[in-house]
Length: 385
Image (cartoon, rainbow, N blue to C red; front, side):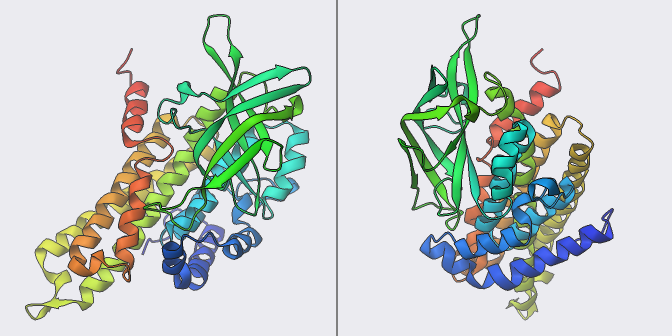
């Protein structure tokens, strides 16, 4: 297990508390929730009671006021046991409360944040059927109508958008055009009970089957101009900053999953014997564990360091992309090793290795594919000057 390198006593206590919760509350039911595609309202409420849902939000809005390393450790420890519930927390903080806290006005913060830190959920409506990596191809429109805006369009693959705890989602829409002809993007805060606004859960997923993933449909949805997040036309900048920080939570999910898959397969390899010896002692197996341990150590040190940069308010566009790319691909590698080491048992649903393997794949796709991360890194080192 990770040593307490550069962690305060409070951070170590938090990590151990989250680990205990994940082991005692989530692990016993994780396989069943995954198999039945059931989003657990009960677990979500318990995580809110523990302060997981308002991790870095100030106490004046009901949050826990944690630093970014501490928040990331929450997600990491949950992902070590179950990607679905880790995704609920990661998406709610980084994509739900984050934009409201960073870009919302005081009235919006006071209206929504106390509810979102105490049990309600909020989504981030960016991805569309024709706008994934190409977010600039957003088709959802917002047309001004006096003191109101009329929204039409759809979103897909939106986490936390259609649970019984969901209050609403932030919606990115094309709100006009700039003088040079480029699209103008604005974010709107839309509550789930707004007329014309419909959400629908997506089922039959390969991964995160116990998290809520949704489609959103908007048919002449009418919202007041006070629902604009920040300023008109700032939507794209808000989205980019949100993704910068959101990539840290996906990186922490990759790190946590890698640690969980490593621990699970190592425990198996110490007990499983072949040719009279535990298979962990065979060089081909031992080297897989050595490579995995090396990757996990490097990933944790780098990710925590980037989180400390975030605490200081430094730009993390390149560093966040590196962390997300490295940790997500590490999760794939370690979970793949785990299945290989366990052989046929690694392919069976009664063993956790199979679920780690499935859950790892989304980390290379969500919040910017591995290809997009490499593009972000390349841009930031001057390849396209």
